[in-house]
Each structure stands twice: as C-alpha cells, then as structure tokens.
Length: 144
Length: 144
DNA sequence: CTTCAATTCTTGAATATTCAATATTTTCAA
DNA sequence: TTGAAAATATTGAATATTCAAGAATTGAAG
Image (cartoon, rainbow over all chains, first blue to last red):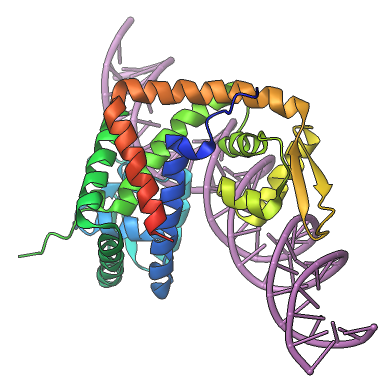
C-alpha cells in the first residue's frame, strides 16, 4: 500500500529554502548591476547608520559566519568601502565603519533593493507581502 | 535630517534569509544525528518515490546547481545510497535511483524531519504554520 | 542523410566557505 | 594581584561551490 510520505514541497524548511533562493536570485540579479554580492549590500546597509559595529555584531546582523565575514570585510577594505578601527573600550573588538565611497554605493544599492520590493508588491500584492513579513518575524521570534 | 532608510530587518529578502537560516540550522542539527547534510535528505526524499529522476530534474527539485549536485551524488554513490542508470530513451540523461540502503536511511531522516515540523507546530502554532506555508507557496508561484 | 545548434551531464580550475587552532584582550575568582 | 577562563577576531588548511569549458547525444533544418 506504500504510505505516500509527505512530499518535500510540503515541508516548511523546504518552502523557506525555495522562496529564499528565488527572492535572493532576483535581488542578486539587480545588485549585479553594481557588481556587488547580496552580503555586501547587507553589510553596507547595517553600517550606514554611521556608528561602529563590532565584527561579532555584524556577523549576526548580516547572517554570515565569523571567518567568512572577516574575509569579505578584507575585500571591502581593499575597495575602500569600509574601514576598521580598534574599539578603544575593548581592544579585543574591531569596530567597522562605512566610508564615504561606501555611503555612495549603499544609496545606489538601496534603490535597487527597493525596486525589487516594489516589484514583489506588484506581482504578489500588498496584503500578502505584509502578512508574510509579519509571519516570518514571528517565526524568527519563536525560534529563540 | 538624515532620512532613516528602511532598516534591513524590514526587507522581505532579509526576513526570508533569516528565517531560512534559522530553520535550516535546526534541521541540520537533527539530521547530524545520522551524519547527513540537509541536501542529501532532500535528494533521498525526492528519489524515494522509487522512479528514476534525471540530474536536471533533481537539481531543480533539491535546489542545487548542476555541478554541485553531480559531486554530491558522487559521494552518495560511494556510500551506496543511490545509483546511476543511463536513460535508455535519451542517452544524454542519467537517471538516479535510490538504493535499499538509501531507503532505510531515508526513513530515519524523515522521522527526524517530522520531529522538527512538530516542534515548530508546538512553539509557533498550527494556524500560523499553515498560513505561512500557504503564503510561501503563493510567493513562489508569483515569482515564475 | 548530414551538419549544426541545442540539451544534458561532468570535469578542472578558480573562488569561497568552514573548521580548528591561534593570538590578543578582558573578566573574575582566589 | 595573579592566573585561569571567557570573549573576540583572524589565520591556514581542508572542504565545498561555482564558473567556464568539454564530451556525448539528440533534434531539426536544409
């Protein structure tokens, strides 16, 4: 009688991976106009509040592992998009700041990202989008 | 006056990445009991319908790029979880099948994955979960 | 038929990510 | 105050992923 196991497409973990992959692909496509990976957009966006963020804080915020972030920041420092400053209050820490060049790029990237959000709003709908966001936030909350 | 740009945590792309990362991390943790990465669970699950799936079909289904899948399948063939058969109708294609050993493992993995879904249902709620799934499916649909 | 473009999968080299170990600084208990 | 443990960031080696190119087969137009 072969019990028809739950198809993979009904697992929440799979649906999230699929949706994430698709939306990320679209965003990637837009950001590629500026030759920047999604992670760098996130980094610039977080740093564009102008204050210094430690590497640990930043790694959490941009969803990257520590060593991966370190190496990506190395590249961004070479591109003079960000710079390191040792935290004077705790010298184990490094504070990251966005440069002027970084700010300029960040603005361009933001408008590309906003483009995408608007495109989603159009095809997916205002109501669904905000409802989805609400549910995702609450899922993330409930996972801590 | 410094226009307070949309925080990254309000972007759908970011919320999806964050939720996906968290749920995936939890699933990874459970599957690690059998020493198997999430992608292999997906592969085994798709193949456990018993029929042959081409590499291209499989790559789409399990959300992996072609070359990445090829190399992962190489490992799984070594572990005798799956095997390749040339498609007799189109010899460009390779059909993948699950082995008996693969079926046994697949069952164990499924129960670990079901565990997780149940855990999510408990902490997140029945209603929210099914509503989230519905919205994700519809987002994926609207992206094609 | 024959040839050329398209499809499917794999390979090898270039890149990127991860794990474990290391260096530095801070914290805190004895 | 000292010394051990914890916290923070980086490094180097091992591993995995990706990009571009290649091999095999099919399709289809002339």
